[in-house]
Image (cartoon, rainbow, N blue to C red; front, side, top):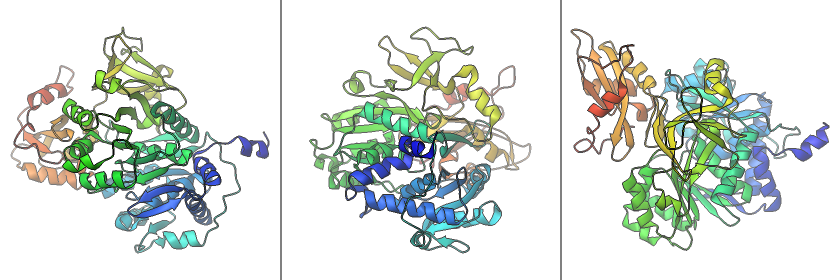
Length: 528
């Protein structure tokens, strides 16, 4: 196929923005903390990012990390990296230095873009990882780093003269691993573009909408939530990624005339509990979305009660699926409260048993997927990829049942994972951190119910003979090695951890034994 034909056929992620810039160059694209970028400005700055990176040797197939809090530069960096045919690697800013270094090394990142607040972590990584050839900082540059703005000023605002194929990697998103190490889910331009189209169809976004999300941009839903609106030429409002303030969120919803918004259940609980929410114009806000974790029914009931004339939509999915796999919307949001809805368009799903055979409707099985939003695999993890695609379907790890009307209900997780305040936590990661403590002989970590965070990690510990350690000491030990939200919210000391005949820890029994721990006196504690 000729290059001219390739150029005429391509639809890759940055092109979604470029098309809007050609149609409505002066329309606002992004807003954050009083600052705005029009589509023309966003397009030009993304081009400058691409030029700055190319001047530092970045080319097609390279991986470039982004370690930033939510800000305008995050989005333009994401797009600029992809304009070169390179792959963006957003890094969770909550990770410990050890975890940041692991992601940067495992992803084979050739450089890092950070902001002033996280520049120290970026510089520490660059000092120990020779493969990181450059470090650009938005704001005051740290020692050994360069100014992001100076690099952009020296680069051209014209797009790179190259063709990016839609099968090239656009996004390497790290998910926590069952063995204690994160894995990079490889998402192509096709994955992200099709997910964007799925989202537009399912949520019925339209010209003139204004989007606001409470998710951090390193999160798969944070970045992918922007793309449908950037494609439509609509304004997307970016929330700060730290220090969530429900009153300020309500003020931003009103200030920007937001019509579609997304918050995790814990955020909705706080928003709906504030009297200021009555100031919102019900004629403007038309879709209130939630997801990223399961929600207590009382939170959903409060959401429906607070916004009786607003459509409530649950977006269900996972990183490996780019991310949305099912939606619950319209009148079904009340009638089928607790369900995650039906599979999205372009997502084929089955519910299977351990042998990969379909289970009868109403019985519990693992939901598996096919379709153009399925990831290309885990980066340089052939065994894990092969296991995830056993039987030629992607295995989600979610145990679900389907009711008589075809609505899906999540029952449990096949994978040993919990979701605390919308963040994935794999117990193996926490166990690996705790077992390094010299006083710990054995440890098992489980997720238990929490009234605010839905789930929170609990560590059940056996100490070495003659050794001693306090709960606070072990929590602080894990905090130094893990992102803060992964540390155990409580530690229980015991003489024996229940196991089956094969020696496997009976984690369901531990969850049942300690299920009521956070029902009263410790209910207000924050796990992360």
